[in-house]
Image (cartoon, rainbow, N blue to C red; front, side):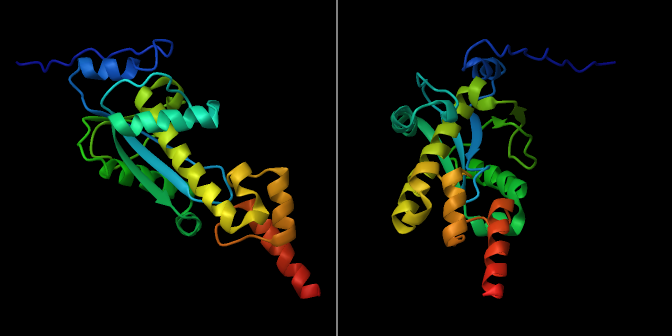
Length: 222
């Protein structure tokens, strides 16, 4: 009887450096490797931006985009897009309201991978598993802090979205989008109370829905 040989699984220590996952997968012949992450999941205004990144060369200084300064993120973004295959998907608030945040996020990750010009042999996703990807995949807890390709994807998604929110601030200056990027802050709450939501808010989110209801009740009483 022939017994199928299964290679021993690789053990990746979380303190082995940002490229440990890529090195372990490459030793198994699994390249190229794509990392996938999103920006704007917790915001109540603006799009959800999902990025997939395959790094062709090592980029020094990568890390969780949320822990980097805007200037560092911008610098790393320019380096990443020069040496990586990048796929980006922008999901507008109306789609998030219609489909739900998680479904939109999962769909966005699949679409971002599909926009890569190469076919990855393995995919690392940040935080949760994504069914329906075109290659074997692994959900990595806090992947943007431990896997280089996921960190690169987080930076691409964050910088892309931040630039969009700054542009929206020029169109809707009363909300302060350039400052808080659509997340819930005291200033954003006050702006919602004063002006109500605009077309770029997510009406399915509690903070926005509450203000919508209060504004409508106030209009009815008046």
